[in-house]
Length: 166
Image 1 (tube, helix red, strand yellow):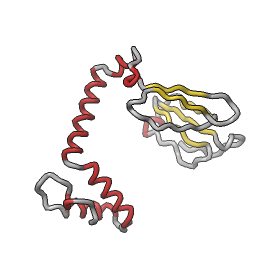
Image 2: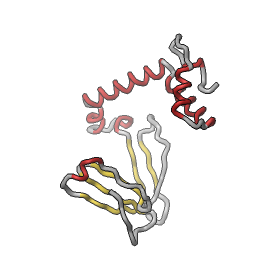
Image 3: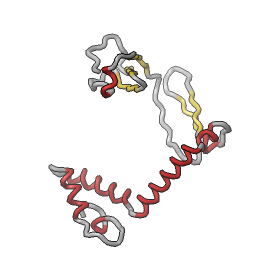
Image 4: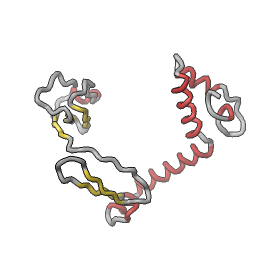
């Protein structure tokens, strides 16, 4: 689905299209099409909304903090309070967040992190991407494969014994 033209929309507005339980939001001046997969061709409702931006605020999210207050810049008095239910111990939300499916997902994430840490994969892949961006090879996928294949094995450490490209 593509928007063929729009007149009278503020330059900082957003267009939201929803179809078959999928929602995509883009800036109104974006020329990118909205990709919904094959389900958009089936009969159903296509909902279009135009959203205006009231402002933007950023916060450094820290796991231990739990509560934040953000004030949007501008003429309007808009303040938003955010809270992490797990960090603040808010009843209800914290119980729902620690339900069985969430607990399984958390355990799975912890297992994945342990695996990545054990094999130093995160550091290696970050170093490989950094080296890739510095070298900018003509064939980036081939370059990455060569980096991985250059490792002769053993020890369980990072391939090549250190940073890629080095």
